[in-house]
Length: 376
Ligand code: GEM
Ligand code: ZN
Image 1 (tube, rainbow, N blue to C red):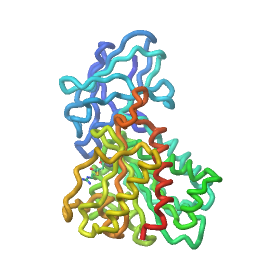
Image 2: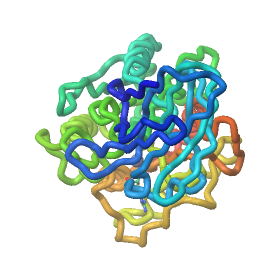
Image 3: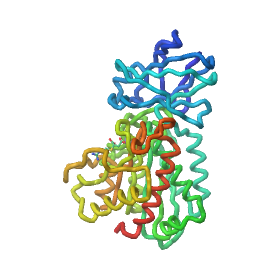
Image 4: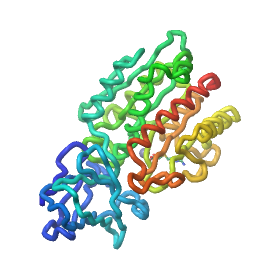
C-alpha cells in the first residue's frame, strides 16, 4: 500500500503505515501558519474487498476541532465522483474505515477543485459573450489571480463583484463560481439577460491559488489570512487582496459577494454587514430581501443557523464583506457553504458537494438579477 499527497492540494503526512487496519496519518499545517484542517491524499496498492482503517491522528489540534463531530470524509476512485465515508472523531483523531472496490482511492476534506480545472474554467469563461480577462494579479508565488469581466451592455451602470476561496481549503467556493460561469453560458436565460442589461459582473474565481495548491486551510504562502487583510493589504504579505482592492477602487462596487465554506455549521448561510457603522435601513432591507429571495427561489439556503450577528458598530472591518460594504456603502455578503451537509436537505451519500455548490452559484445569480434594479 502506498500513500501520497505530493500533488495539487495534497496534504497528509504518514506517521505509521505498518498496520493497514490502523494507518496513522497527520494533517500538515499551512506554510508559515499554525492553521490546518484540509486533507487530501491518495492510497495505491489496495486489495479490493479487504478492510483498511485510516486515522488523522492530530485532528483534535486542528483549527476547528469541534467541526469533526458529525463530519464524514469524502472519497473517490476516479477524482470525479466523490462520496462520504462514515467517520468517527474519537480520542482526538478522525478515523474512517473502508473496504475498497478498487486498488486506488483518494480521500479529502471536501471535493477538491483542481488547478487544472481552474485553468479550464478561466478559458471557458473567456469564451462567454461579453467576457474578458480584465486584469491579472499575482500571488506571492507568482500564480495568476484572474479578474474576469462579463459586460454585455455598454450602458450597464451597476458593478457586481464575486470573489472566491480567500480561504484556500474552502474548495466549495470555486465550485460555486463554476456554477456562476456555467449559468452565464446559457443563451436563453431571461433572468440573466435582464441582469446583464443593467450590470457588469466582476469575477475572481480563486483568490488564493498558492494556498489551494499547497493544501492549506486558511492562509496564503506568507501565512496571511486574506479575510483579515482588507484594512492592511500589502504587496509583500497579501498581494492577492491588494490587487483586487485596487481594481475595486478604479471600477466601483454595487453588490459584493465573498464565497466561503464553513467547517462547523451544517447549513448554507450568509453573514452580512449589520455591525458596520454605515449599516442603514436601506442596507438592512436589501439584506433581508436577498435572503428571502434565495429561500423563495428554492435555493439550498436558510437563515436559522449562522454566525452570531455583530453588534452595530462592532464589525471587524478587516474582513472583505465588512470592508467592501463599508467603503462602497453597498450590499455585501459572506456566503458560507458547509464542509458537512446542508442539514435542511441532507444527502448522506455525498454530503454537501461540488454539484450542490454549483447550483447555489446559479441560484444566487438569479437573486442578483431580481435585485439589480434596487441596489442603489
Ligand atoms: C469567516 S467570516 C466571519 C464573519 N463573522 C461574522 N460574525 N460576521 C471568517 O473569515 O472567519 C468566513 C470563513 O472563514 O469562511
Ligand atoms: Zn472562509
